[in-house]
Amino acid sequence: MAKAKKNDFSSKFRVNDEIRVIGNVRIVGEGIKSEVVPISKARKIAEDMELDLVELQGKSDVPIVRVCSYEKMIYELKKAAKKNKQPKPLKEIQLSVNIAKHDLETKVNNAKKFIEDGSRVRVTLSMKGRELARREDNKKSILEFIVMMDEVATPESAPKDEGNKTTVILKKKA
Image (tube, rainbow, N blue to C red; front, side, top):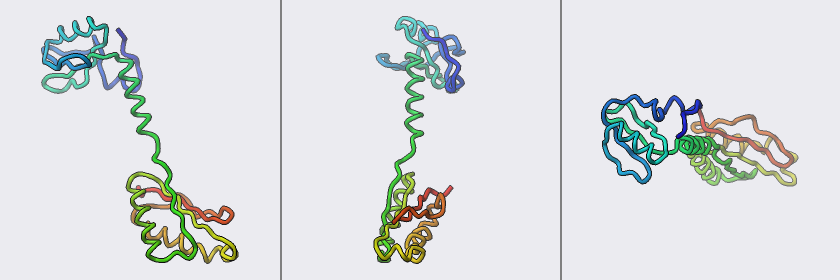
């Protein structure tokens, strides 16, 4: 049987002899019928199965304990926490210099949906040929897009010129 290792989950769970319960507990686990039993019987069941007894909820009237491998449970919790930390993907919206008002509004609505889902949005303004000569005048469509998104999102930085494109990344307002 494993001993409780000191890690970030050690304060959340008590294991085996650390469980300080007098009376009955609800025992759960894989292959175990969920029932209320005395703590001594729960310890005996865990010992017979060569697994650990982990206290999941100790502050209720009938504490809940689980018969499982403590290391495996901690590993799965860490894995789930790591998976939840991963950032949402970066979505991209492409604009053109002469975009119609209605098309711009449609793209703003799509970007708002992306932002509400937790993603960041990269807005790209592509310029071709003679449009590159009037780069500053052509940025008005991307600036108008940023203004329309103002209630939901903020730009991470000022729009950047990258060759024939101008890009800005928008993130959810705090």
